[in-house]
Each structure stands twice: as C-alpha cells, then as structure tokens.
Length: 144
Length: 144
DNA sequence: TAAATAGCGATAATTATTCTCATTTGACAC
DNA sequence: GTGTCAAATGAGAATAATTATCGCTATTTA
Ligand SMILES: [Mn+2]
Ligand SMILES: [Mn+2]
Ligand SMILES: [Zn+2]
Ligand SMILES: [Zn+2]
Image (tube, rainbow over all chains, first blue to last red; front, side, top):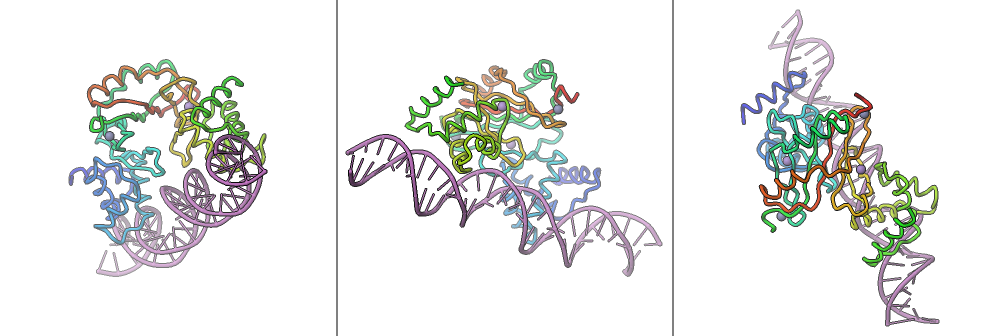
C-alpha cells in the first residue's frame, strides 16, 4: 500500500503534479476499494470519512488527473454515472468485466485473452490498437 | 427499407406496441443513418426535419423502447451522451467498434471475432454470456 | 357510443459533471 | 525563517443530458 502510493507520487511528480493531502486521501480510498467500481460520488463519500473538508470538485479533478495518467480507468456500465477503476500496476491494457444481468454484480478478468483478436484487427482493419474495453453481459456463476 | 420497417412494426406489435407516426419517423432516421452513432439530440434534430411537431421526450421514449426490443443498442463512448446504434437484423451479439484517438472517428466491425474468447470465459468463469461490448481505442487507418 | 388506455408535446424537475472565483497551500529562492 | 507565485482547493453557481409530470388527443375496447 505505502509503496504503491510512493510510486503513484513519483508518477505525479514526473509530470510535475503534486500529491496533495486531498489527492493522497483519494488515492487511498481507491486502493482500499480496489475490487469495487466506485462512482465519483462514492469516492467523495468515502474520502469525506477521513478528510471531511474535501470538496466534491476536488474529487472530480483528482479522478480526472488519475485517469489522464492512466492510474485509473473511467468506465461506464450504462447506469447514469462514470465509475473509476484502478489499473493493475504496469498493465498497458484495461482489464475486462463480467456484468450479471440478474444481480448486477461486476466481476473482473485480468487475463488479456484478446491477443489473437487484436492481431487480426490490427492487420485486417489497419488499426493501431492502444487500448480496449471489453464487457460481457450475462448470468454470473452465483445466479445460475 | 420498407420491408425492414414492416418487420420492425411486427416486432413492436408482437409486444403490443404500436408503430405510431412519430416512432416510424424516428426509425426511418435511424435506418437512413445506419453507419452513424447518433445521440438522442442528433436523432431529434433529424426527425424534426420531416416531422417538426415531434417532442424531444417522444424521441427519448422511442429510443428507450427500441433499446428494450434490441432493435438498437445504447452505447457510450465517453463523451457525455448516449448514442444509439442499429443492430444488424437478426444479430444476437452487438458489433464492435474502432474509436480513433486522433480524429475521433468510429468504425464498425461486424464480424464476431470473439467466439473462442467467449468459450474460454464461459468455461473458466462459469458465466453464461448473453451479449458483449468491445471497443478498441487507437489510431485509424486514415490517421496513420 | 361511452369508457379505458396508450401515446404525445410541452415543460418542469432532477442529477451528474464542469466552471468560476476568491482563498489557501506548498515548493522553492533568498 | 520569510517572501514569492503558480498550483490547488472549496463553495457554490452553471450547464446539460435525461427523466418525470400532466393535460390532451387518438385509438382501442366494451
Ligand atoms: Mn474493473
Ligand atoms: Mn456501431
Ligand atoms: Zn448474478
Ligand atoms: Zn483517425
């Protein structure tokens, strides 16, 4: 945890951003809820518990910054809100999701699985893939 | 075109919805712009040209209905608006997208490409896949 | 024909996100 | 340590997409 924050701090500094207390508190919330898919409002509520003076706009700005640095990914599961998802450290591609249409749960797939498909797409469509988003909708193992 | 509308009409009737003039005008706009990814506002503007009395709420209601019947898919490319995309007739899976991070263009991939990947996911995660969303982000052939 | 229902248009309400601006903070130079 | 100054912050206003409400009309049903 602490080392991870340290590395994020370095990442920020390398682009001459500071790890302010507000930003650190926000990052901690994201790390502590790594398996969830929190909305900005969710993050705001959780950060407030430890840092009650923080403003909502600061949370939005921090999430935007972290997205720009590819520390988190901003995703949208079709309910009206954006959600923020920590990237695996060093991963250059975003992980995949399994959304259950029964219970609404969202599980993750960290394996890439798309290497072959991407080769085909790069060649056949002459498209240089930089990242991807893949979500499966269906019935999860708990609901079957 | 006319046959396609006729089939959509049947699909609506089979769930005891009517193809009102407003709905038909909306469907026509979607068919005439099959390659685009129109927002509700875009659709509204285009429908107005032929049917100026239509209300924005009706367009939203129609798009919602068509989404429910899986005639269109509602997607989100991360700009703040939902976009509506006609499904290939009879396709049970949504097609894929190539989003260019240079010029913003969105191209389509109608081929499935995911059959093998889905077999793995179904088995390894014990997840019954009903549909998928796959978007690649990168540099399109025009921008390379 | 009369009653019930579905769909409509206008517009108010809601809500997630962004913007504005006065104030504060923190890294750095002296 | 103190002063400097751009960067960051918090409060709240503004924006914009979507949804809800409601009175009205058209269509179906009894
Ligand atoms: Mn995730
Ligand atoms: Mn499409
Ligand atoms: Zn489930
Ligand atoms: Zn391009």
